[in-house]
Length: 111
Image 1 (cartoon, one colour):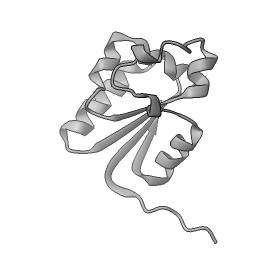
Image 2: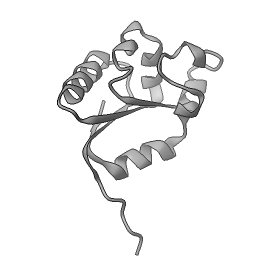
Image 3: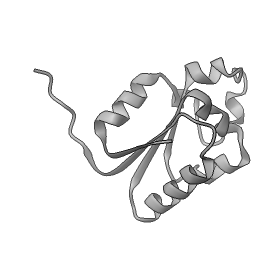
């Protein structure tokens, strides 16, 4: 039997797989952060398109940000990694990062 990871109290994981809900992502992140929650956001699918919007800066410093490298490349954004504020080279990750969040976050929301 495989042991499940323990959920980390006071955490919120957000999966962003659509390019339609930036205002909701920002609002939820602001609210959770203001209440002292640790927020982790993973952008995948068409959600990676949100990383280049001006509103993305509202997430910087309020959440740990990760981006699916495969999706980023699939949407033709390769070479634009430096344009994504608050995200370093190591934050361009695989779906294993998403799986880690699902396993460890106390709450998990999908947009």
